[in-house]
Length: 253
Length: 351
Image 1 (tube, rainbow over the protein chains, first blue to last red):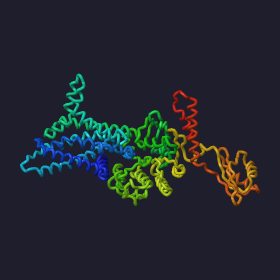
Image 2: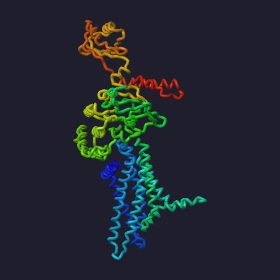
Image 3: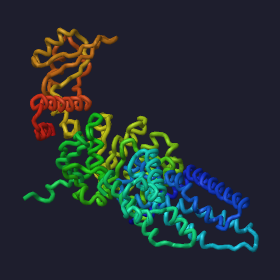
Image 4: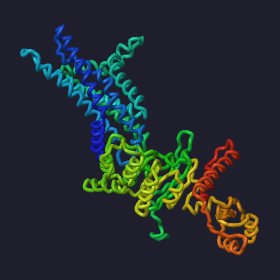
C-alpha cells in the first residue's frame, strides 16, 4: 500500500482542479438547502412534534440518487476510455491501491459535502426561540448514518465504474445499484406480496435490508450494529469485486 | 561449458508468446530476445499484433500462453518487479488533461518510486532532455501534439528504467521534433534496451539496431536492416547517369554479364544525361565491372554510378506479402483440418 497516499493525493488534486467538482457541490447544496427550507416552511404552517433535522435526514436518498453516480461514474471508466489507466497500471501500483484511492477520494468529497449541510442545523438552532429544546443526538445519529451508508453507496458506484469504459453506462449502473439497494431493500416485504406462499427468509431478510428504517433508527439516536455490519460487509464486498475486475481486465498485478 | 563472457545479457526474453482475443490470435507464437542497450524496432501493418505484444511485455495484458522475462524476471509471476524496470509510452499517448506538465511528471516520479531527494532533480533533467522546461507550467490538455508526445517520452525515461517501450513515439511530430526524439532515443543506446514501433520505416532504419517485422501475430522477419534486405530483396539495383544511347548501353552491359537488365531509361536532361536503372537478380557486386565497361566505351559518357540500397519499405512489403502468401497456401492446402502452427518453419527461416 506504499502508493496509496500518492494516488489519493493525486485523486484529490484532480477533484480540486476540476470545475465539475464545484458545480456538483453547488447543485448538492442548492437542492439540500431548498429541501431544508421547504421543511421549515411546512413546520411553520403546521407544527409537528418531530425535530425538523430528523425530517431532513429522512430525505437523504434524494441527493444520494444523483450525487453517487455523478461522483463515481468517472473514476475508472473515464481513465479506461482515455487510456490513462494503461499508463497507471504499467507503474508498480496494485489494483487494490487504485480502487481504494479512488474510493477514498470520492468518500472524502462526499463527506465534505454532507459536512457542509451542518450549517443548516447551526443556522436553524441559532434563530429558534430561546426556550426550544436542543437535542443534538438525532443530528449526530443522522450524520453517523450518512457516514456509514456512504461507504456502501460509493463502493457500489466504484464497482459500476469498473465494469465499463462508458461513463454513461457506469452512471446508469451506479444509479440502478443504489436505487435497488435503497428502494428494493426498504420495500422488500411489499414487493414479495404477490408471492402466494412467501418464504420465511424473505421476511427475515426484509428486516435487515430496510434502509429507510435504518435511517429512522440512527436519526432517533439508535445506533444499530446490525446495520453497520450490513453496510460495512457489502461495501467491502463491492470494493473487493472492483479490485478483481480491475485485475482481470487490466493486467497481471 | 560456455564461459560467462560468451553469454549475452538479455533484458527482454520472449518465448512462444500467444494472445488470443475470442477467436482471433492477436499474437501467435512470437519468440525473440533483446540484448542490454539494444534498440529494436517493431514494424508491421495495423492489427499485426505490435501493440498487443508491447502491452504483454509491460504487464498490462495477460498472455494466453508463453514466457516473457524482463531482466530475467517473469512478467507473469512478478509483475510489480518487472514494472519497476520498464518505462512505457502507450499508443496515442494518453495523459491527464487537467494537470500541469511538472505536476504530472512529479506524481509519476512518486508512483515510479524515485527517491524523494532525487525526484525534483530528475524531473528537471528529463524536462530539459525532452525540451519541456519552457512548457513545465502549462496545462497538458492545452499543449500541442508535439509537446504532449514529449511529455509521454519524458515519463517513459523518467525512472531511468532498464527497458523502454514506446508505441509510435514520433507520430504527429514535425521534422525538427522527430530529429530531437531520434537523437534522444539514440542517446539511450548502450544504457537502456528500447523497443519502438513506428510506421515511419526510415525512422526505424535510422534509429534501430534490430528490426522485427510482425504480421498476423507472427514475426516474419528479424535482423539488422541489411540482413533483412538480404533475406527479402532478391535483386541488386544500380543507378547511373550516362550520356549515350540505350542500345549502346545494352551492348556494353552484355560484356559484363547477360543477367544485367536495364529497367529504367529516363529522357536526357539539358546536358544530355539520362538516369538509368540496372537490375541484377540476386545479390551481386558488379559496380567496378560496370564502371570499367562504361569507361571503355567511347560512345557512352558516365557521370555517376551508385548501388541503390532497397528501402526498408520494400523489405517490409516483401516480408508481409510472403507471410500472407504462406497463410493463403496453408488455408488452401488444409481447409478443414486443425493445423499446428504451420508458419513456424517460415518464421525460423525468415528470422
